[in-house]
Figure: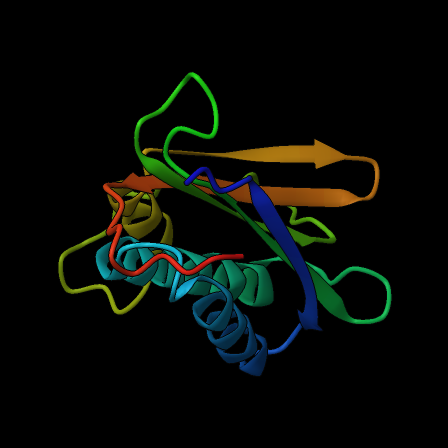
Length: 150
């Protein structure tokens, strides 16, 4: 059974509670569609990206952040035989370009993008005149017994 690519977009507050809202929505939408390990990694990456947007970037108009994710099931295109989840967090931008930092082992923060880089296949930053989007792609083997019909 082929399942088509699906995408979601959620607007959340530019506030730490926004990360919880984003995690809950992502989990609700994808829990039956992807393997639990892939879902856990996608949730962790999304939480890091939202946390970074709240901490380091300005909000979009309305004091919000836009969070989006896309599911490309295995076999939905010729490029992959694995499920792929892309998460994207769009904010009003930051003064500094998001980057992985080298930090001391006893530092209490600064590991967010290192976590994103470790869990994702690839990640990046897109900028336009309205702000910036930080995105990450994760892939994993599909758990066929968990899939539900759309």
